[in-house]
Image 1 (tube, rainbow, N blue to C red):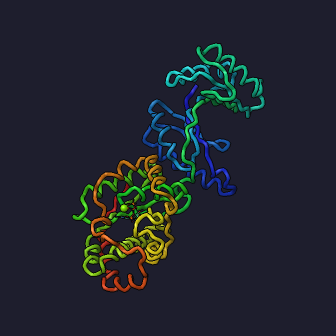
Image 2: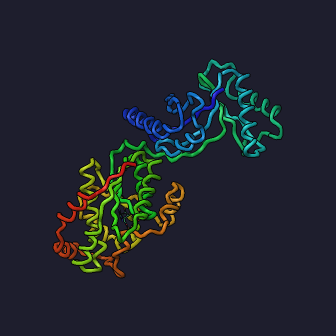
Image 3: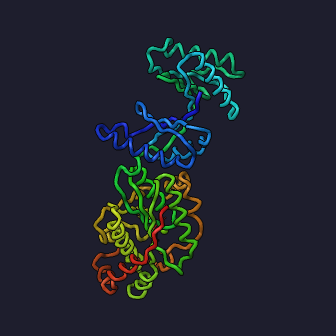
Length: 389
Ligand code: ATP
Ligand code: MG
């Protein structure tokens, strides 16, 4: 009897002719997610994926946790894989249930059987009732409740038999890398890491760009962003982070443009620089954490003026979410605690008390004409630092 991990795939099963492409990407991503946890074989069979440890170096619990973060997987179970022999099945299920009850006291159970192997001598209802009777006899303190059990013993008889009780939900989505690459504009805030996570969940590979305004923002503010990107890699795989020096641009804007237009002009610079870096690195879209109406730069008029700065598509997956919804996701994906660390963001340093909420594009462009936009952008890109995470 051998303990393995069973992974259930979601949407990719609907992919028709493209399915092998999605499956291979998914298996690739799983392999990367567990590579630090010992030797294991990844096997695909009948729409499912199994991870089978090859030796005792394999860290089962760590691998189990890591694969729940791989997009394209809907749920995960630790499973006993045994010989398809009813005596072996009974004995294994008994061991599994006794082990399960050590951690959480449950009283009622049922057995649910699927028989794919029609040459097995008992049919599904017979397996369920005989195994149920065996467990009642051998495991003290449990009774059957077929309608509302505390736990279910699932038995799947195929070439081998798979026995399990736990079903751990994963995030679904599509395997990262099946939908091209996009450039995430990441601040140190709560929103942008969640925005990146949501697009990665739809199969988009991420690259990231961060603007920092040293010495107006601290080294620790930069470290915080690096840590946020590192947290995203658990879901999105490797991410290349571009750190762009933004101080000169902000000082110029502050110096030469009306104060209440500062934020919107700065946002347009960010978009233009991000677009250039995206084009240089094969990213096909930009991602931001903007949400309708959240701040002055996120009114419909401001978003329109920001958008006009670039021609790549801009994805704003949080556009229709309330802050509470975003916080919920941030907590769930573990970025929240890092996001709320109190280091200044470059946006807040030069921000006007009353920024324009209804900027007019022609006015903004006129103000921008006082700046050497191309030169400033070129210099910022030249001095960009790249970190592979
Ligand atoms: P966040 O919580 O992501 O910081 P926010 O609600 O504070 O967002 P803004 O500060 O207006 O909103 O920023 C809007 C979006 O612009 C961010 O979600 C992010 O995508 C991008 N952005 C803002 N500041 C930076 C920065 N310093 N570097 C890179 N991108 C940034
Ligand atoms: Mg912010």
